[in-house]
Image (cartoon, rainbow, N blue to C red; front, side):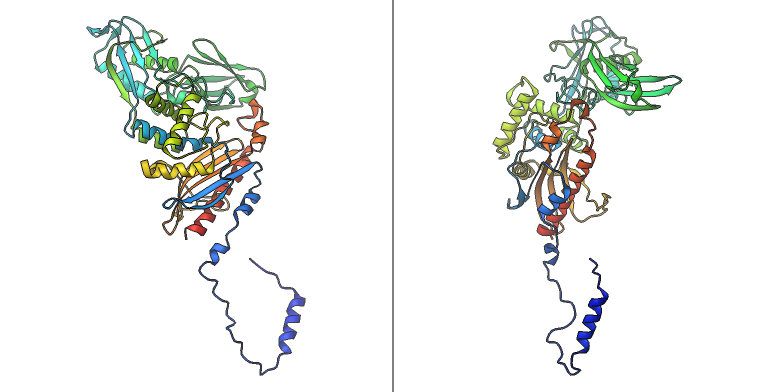
Length: 496
């Protein structure tokens, strides 16, 4: 800090020194600046309330930070106030799935033949049967088609069926989201590409060329079960209609510009996966009829299968990329194994809440889904830190949490920062959360949870405003700055 000295102060001080006798005694203490003491840097950190006030978030700010080894609460604010955790909830879902299913669990997608195979021809129906895999992609279906050919199958006498009954069908994770947002897809026992279809448009003369495809790293097969019509209007930008066997979309021409692309949610995931598999089977020389929904899983012989990565890897990626469908699929799968098939997504979340109270020592957790997308979910900072410490000891949850970089005042990443943070972020409009672990410079390990939410402001949003409301980006940035400031504070006070 710089201080400015006035001319009057300088002249007055000089005159005072000039009036002293020349034989004045030497001072009892050195005129050198005194050492500030080992704890001075801790006294210099900003207070938590000052940091909260500076963030100007409105609503509620709650946090708790705890010594992860002793369980001693180091600092907290409104730690018993239940707030929406947003995607921080996925950390709890990961603990639930790891405990109930085990880290080595694999999701299996199978090809089943009814009636047996004779002379390379399936005598009955060919069934693409999902096992709840949230990570199944187009590349995997291409591999299944290749394995079917390798098994010697050249024809099918009966139907081509698709079955997604391994999980309860969910049309959309949260009803309070716009129809077109890709992070709110359907959930089924048979999912593909996170149940999203890629919509791309390019200006061509007075109109646009439009494609809808199931792209992956290797392939871009076109799809017909999702259709897009360009309509001359400015708003609404998108509309959706359930057209029975397909998803019908319209888009406003006034919003297209010269070109662009986005992912749209799929509401008929079984038919989507079936159509893409039909394309790859055809490329292998096996002509299949259009897919039909199977109401139950038929008996038959397994011809080929695809297994997901082990669950621990699936969950690590879920926590890194915050994929909502992964959380819902693994959460419902865990509930089915634990207590049987839930009637609804919320019923499955309620079972996870019960498990968290029994197993992790939580008291007030009340989630309405497994992903945190629904803003009716509530969690306290105290409960979250309690759960993190328990899960760290029981299943090593810290190892699969995302590394959160420390940033400077301009939000630039500080490379090789001595403080390490492993945590799960959570973001909704006017809701922001961060929870995980801090490894301080002296080796102190802390568990923390920070929840910020301006619920009244969020509740005022119309459905059309939910994707990109005015003010949300700036609010979220200030919330993230506050999170970093609090971590800085705790690292200095309790870890140096």
